[in-house]
Image (cartoon, rainbow, N blue to C red):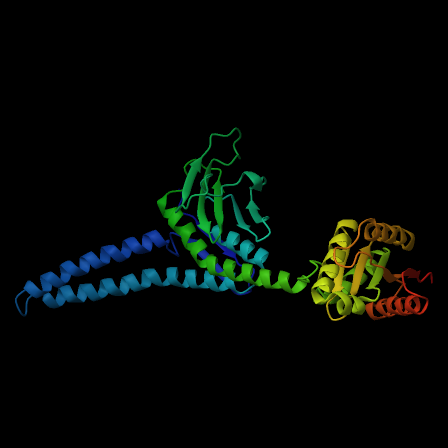
Length: 381
């Protein structure tokens, strides 16, 4: 491999990593240097102890001090690089950003033309990020196919085409893996594996922290009883959906749904029956809405639900609500058999904000309750 100097700029301002023979040193080289100097030190001390007083002992010990100074100078850039790498990767709790920064750090290896990182998530999906020439992440290296633990893996291919990837190197990264690729044959050796493992080792804690943070966010965004979006998630999503609708001049509808006489359900059948009813309604709402729609439960209001329908005009929202009513009436609820709903449907007006949209929906709910419940009221204005 050529003695080249690869420099990358990390996304964090003011942090730069350099790797090459002029500056920086890999983990393997650092350990080898440490071992060599330690051996020389032992010999030097032995000679100094055996030498007659006033002989060359002072000179030997002086050379030993010089070796110690040189070792410190050699290892200092490596330690600074690893420390900077750890800080840069760990400065964010966004998992995607952590993986991107980890991939950026791999460009410090010589001859790297592409990279891939993957981390399995709690829901069974796998989050991946790619770099450079990696265009088919599904075929990227991810460790032994039998799932057994490994230290690293080095592979080679004999592809067709001058620019094709010919070498690959993979190391574990937390619950996932980190891999790099080169168009050169046999581009990676044990030293490269040690360097990539050092990068993964520095990135590992940041990946685990980001995964934990992601889990907390998902838990906070989900109502545990119904599996729908939480009140907190609703408060975040409403202004986002409104901003998008206004920016691209697209329709947006909101349906507020109240379970009729839900307080009587709890009194007559007990809280367990009430919870079961809420959970069943959440299940049927999830089964009816489209993939682009979002359903939320206002846990503070207990029996209040909201449907946020992007790219949906008023008439289409009415048809969706009719399907929901059909699903509600198609089969009895386990605890209370029959459930009815009082709902309000509003379409976003030009220049309207979230407060105005929600106020109009709530006014329609109040009107429906005054008129006898079990109905949908629509604001046609």
